[in-house]
Image (cartoon, rainbow, N blue to C red; front, top):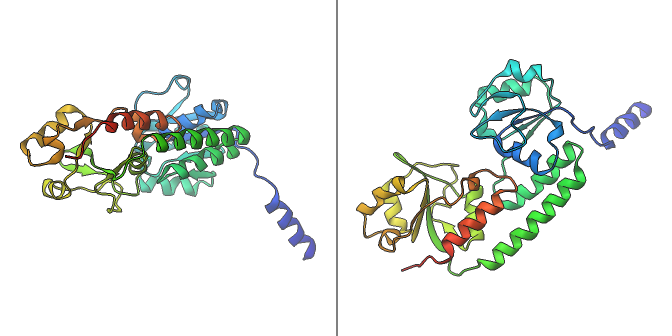
Length: 267
């Protein structure tokens, strides 16, 4: 019995073998593998828009929201990288039943995203690169926080979709990006990832700026001149769609957001 327990403890203490056949089930995870310089470990990706340069040759295992399970299994992966929203709940349960190691990443702020670089790097045998990427990220992030500090914070409405009207709750990483830029999500108190709201709720929270998908999607707000964002002419498209993909490149997108908000007025 003692021998058995000793063997168990030894096995538990040993580091996990690095994954060599990785399938990424989210564009953000694919980008992190690219940023780690670990694309040699990728054997398949889930598509969700244009692929970054360097990943064009990889087999597709489906599109965002629908995995082709037979194609995925044929690739014989030893690690799946998953963003929860990229796969329906039923398919996620199927993936879990296959017994393939699964890493689920859903960072709610930049601190969690930085840790994700280190953890994915460790799992794919690029631990030193993962640590270095985390440190570079944290250093640049601290610089942005210092450069764009502002009190009080600029109230911002982040519009995900216009008809019906959707925004982001406070647990979404974009809310942290706004804080880095000296702003605050006016719906940060909502815990749902993407709550539906109405015009009256937005008017009541009186954002000084509105960030949305495009100029066309923002134009309906012109019908509400009493809204500070309209009166101040601070209706702006998202400056970089990378803001909604949590990988290292999100820092560049966040800096563009900060530059856009830097000159915003309160009244």
